[in-house]
Image (cartoon, rainbow, N blue to C red; front, side, top):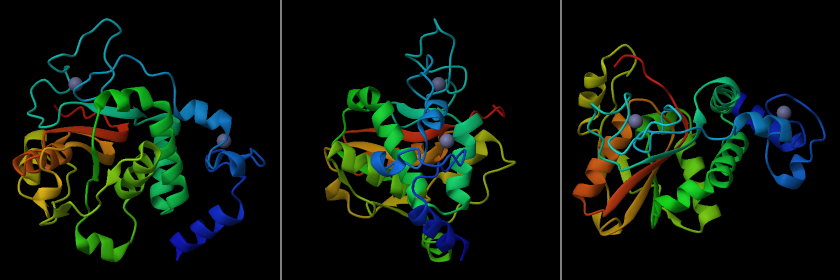
Length: 246
Ligand SMILES: [Zn+2]
Ligand SMILES: [Zn+2]
């Protein structure tokens, strides 16, 4: 019910910024749910990031072989592009979009990712966009998958095919909080499958999710996609969550 009400509010008050509430920010013209001031806060100039996992690294650090946050992890994707780190305004906007089940807000964040990080995304070069799937039981409870919405937005901006059904969840993962990084990777093994391997054969895939923490989920997706014949896999997410447990 809350979902429907929020979506109705988005439709009725499109000119009110979804983050600060400022009215008449010409959202109806830009189509974005956030005002220009909030967009600035949501998309600060990118700092030096690790190419492999998108974590912020020192200004002169290189990340050819990863950074302190990812060096010890086996990641099956080659790179990560993100809008920003999971803190401040981006964290607030992302949580609000998620908990209000607002497709308009999630789509707006996806649009910011595609516009503000377009150079990095183009550099990634991909032929096909594949979002991280939810388990069917999750879909049944709330028909809202942020990854699908963000992937669909990127696909329409880059005019690239988005396949929302290429990957499927084969089992539900146990809650990922309060488990070690190693366990998170082990929990993900075998939870994702490729439903139609010929679609990904020889393709360069952009895997899309809302956030990336340890990288375990996206790495498992990349593993099964490559096993099905994908040429390469890269990742795009709204936010990079720094995980300090390893
Ligand atoms: Zn605002
Ligand atoms: Zn890294």
